[in-house]
Amino acid sequence: MADHNDWTDDDLNHLASEDEIRLSSIRRDGTARKPVRMWMVIDDGRVYVRSVNGTAGTWHRHVRATGLAHVTARGVAADVGVEDASTDAGLGNRLDVAYQTKYGRYPQRVVDSVLTSAAKASTLRLTRR
Image: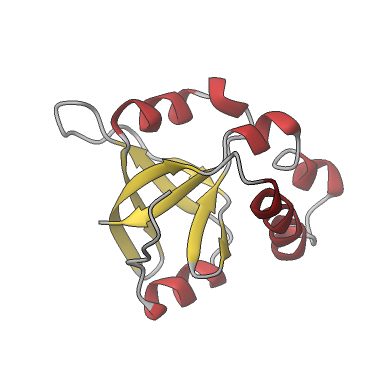
């Protein structure tokens, strides 16, 4: 993964305070698909998402095809690059804790949906473009 972070502190504060973001994958012709609502977490100023359906999830396959997406949340609208972040076990463990901490008020079975091995294999880092 590239070692850069283009999210502003303001972006990160807004994202940290939101339960969900909306992520639109970008087609090869540059148009956006319908957004998908999802959870996200931040680790060391970097933004991460996982697919509860793993790498076979439709939105995940689409963003991996182009490496581009658009994210919206209250106070944030950003074009993002998408990088695989599934191979770093230490990061994966930190993200598990981040998901449990941020979303722990939800039923455990719901939180567990982003902690499965399939979800972990779909971990993506979103980099602001």
